[in-house]
Image (cartoon, rainbow, N blue to C red; front, side, top):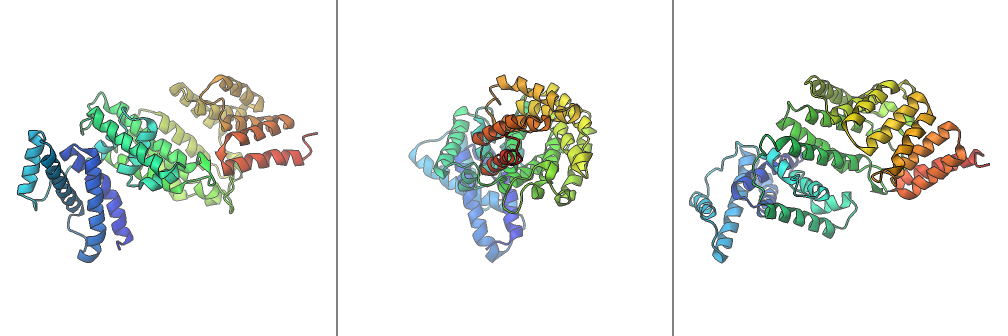
Length: 415
């Protein structure tokens, strides 16, 4: 059995090895199979033989030999292009030669997994599978779908990449910003699903949020000067710092205003604040940096009543001008209510009723219920708490919303 350090090393090296093999053989699906075989071989041999001097090179070499065998068998059935045959011959002639291992293709692999030719669900699944190293079963469990469904989704993603003829190379300067935005968006969605699950019995899916942070660290290590990469990592850390205080002993949801702030992870807050400061100093302010700044303001408050809501409102106003995102507009309404009173927040919420992207979302109803309660309209608040509860598939969120409605009813506000 591998020790924990070796397991972590394999997890870290897996995307680097896969990227190298894909770059050399131009077949994503076959390369992934070869890398999985190499990882299995490592898990069996390293405990007996010891860690090789160059673990990354060892894995690339084993995976390359598997690919050589694959190409050889394929060539027996049909003739391949001359350059493929030449690559196979070269590897076969020197099977013990150490492959080139100095190039890190992890970022290129990220770009491929998040290619515009893929749907967003496919990009998320493929990123977790190929870059994150999660099994198909683990990904299926995290997103509450059958393993067979997730396997089909990943297979379709691989087939789409193959059919599109996407070369395994870094996008050019014109394409790179757009594709990097896609990578960051996928990581943001993975983290969000882990931090607040869209459905099921648990409020949080720690395996997803932790994996998103790990992958964001990877991208940041590859692109340390990109302000939005730093901003996203800072946002994840500043948000994840509150994780231990978000649920009670029975897994019940605890809202931000009621959390025990002594449980917040101060090391994560310090690291996130440092990353945010460095990102903001680069001069170009992006959406992830602004969201991280909002998270930092919340984290700085020793008590809920100490929160600097005017600063948060100003940041959301900047974010609204930058992003046509209904969730940003919803959070802006909350901040406006905290500064100017619930009537202002309710006025801003009314504009979202015609936005099909959020009109049926439980969070819009939940926020409206909360602001109606603050405004003293308790009967309407109860109705909207109950309506919100029927719209969410998250059991902890549903229980919390029904509890809020029951609390107002028990207080005699239904009369």
